[in-house]
Every structure is written in C-alpha cells, then in structure tokens.
Image (cartoon, rainbow, N blue to C red; front, side, top):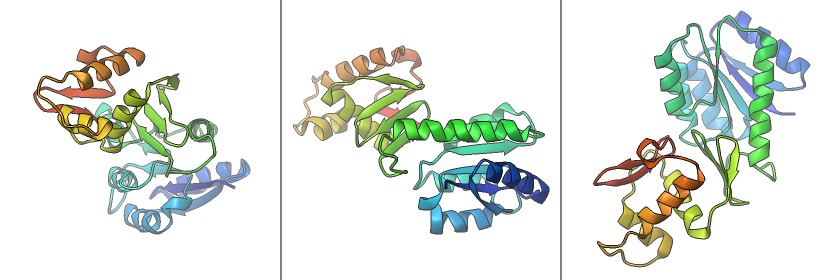
Length: 231
C-alpha cells in the first residue's frame, strides 16, 4: 500500500482527500500545519510515496515544506493553491513541485493526478527503488541504476561521457559547475585552457534533448563561469 502525505490546515479538505484516496487503496497521513509536516518528513520521509501540500498554512508554508522535502527526497509533490497565481506556480516549480491543483478542485481529478505522478515514478525507477536511485530536476529525470535519462517524458540515449556530464550537473543541481571541474570529474585528467571537450559534449546533449543552447531549459550556461541544472 502506497503512503500519501496530505498537509492542509482545512480539516474538511484533508478529510475529503483522505476519503477518495483511501477508496482507491492508498494509505494517507493527514497533517494540518507545515511545522508538523516537516517533523514527520524528517523522521519518516523514506516511507512517503507522494505528498499533497497546501501552500497557505499556519507556521511553515507549503513552499517551506517543499524546500525541506527536496533537501533529501525526490518523491512527487502536488501543491494545492487557493488562487491561480503565476508567481505561486513559478515558485513551486523552481523548488521542485511536480504538479498543481487549484482550489476548489474535483477530488476525482486530484486522485487521477496522484496516480499519474506515481506511474511516472514507477516508469523511471525500473526496480521500484524509491528516492535513492532517482534524480529529478524539472523536466529531467535520471535513473542512476539503469543509467536511463528522460526529458519531458521522452527517453534520450547518451554516450558514457555525455551521461557522466549530465549526472554530475544533476547531482549538483542549483550549483554552477565550471568546464574545468566537469572535465576533471568525468575524464579524470587535468584540464587545459584550450580544451573544448566539455562544450562539445554539452552541445551534443542539448541536440539530443532537442534544445537550443541559447534557450536551454535543462542545462543553463552561466557565461564565463560554467554550467548548471536548476533545482
């Protein structure tokens, strides 16, 4: 039985979500504020398969709970918002949210979105190992056991060096990694100033992702510094 964490300060909504999820065979953990959620996640995060978080809550907000989750865990997170606001959506996605549902919502739609997110995780994690063998950064998904890479639900086939470059950036998502650091990490040799190997490989990765380097949504170029994959 899969475990779904539901965090919403409106108890009626929590009970409604709980009713529909339990009817579909899920086990739910209901909490009503962000502080309790963070305590539970820190102690039991490895047992959570998906979280549903309200944004506006007493104490810690849903965004703060999400940020705490993404320090250690990669299970899917669906955010609940009482208003349609682009800024809320951008903030949530930048912190690692997987989906959004706007209140008032149809509980059947929410249940369908839960199932869709869980199917996606199972698809990318071939042996069903939660969290530890799966790196998720926006549109990018990497199964480190099978070395399979997906971008926007489409699998791309990479060479050994292309994969190792992408994995290095994904493991350090949010940080800017220089071409020198990437080369020495992947090839294990000293980097020379006129070495364009990393740039060439990143161009090939972007080509396989069908991305224009100037408008890349996965690997960002920080001119004069290096490359990064945003969290």
